[in-house]
Length: 79
Image (tube, rainbow, N blue to C red; front, side, top):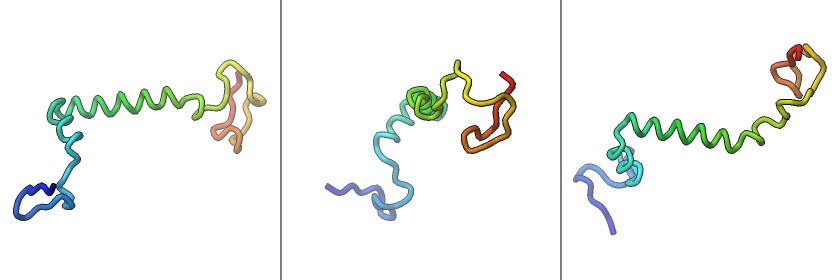
């Protein structure tokens, strides 16, 4: 089944958007769509947190005030 958008456009043109995203954006509006995208990003970060940050927040991982290194890219603090 081929959709005809207009005489000048085809489905391969850059102006074509996937139907699901277009419907979602229309239903939510631009503010709702951006909010949903941010919420999805935050939830994904929360779920992947153990993978993204390998250290336990309550455990000491290095000497105090170390310089940046491969193990600690920003160095360590005095705690």
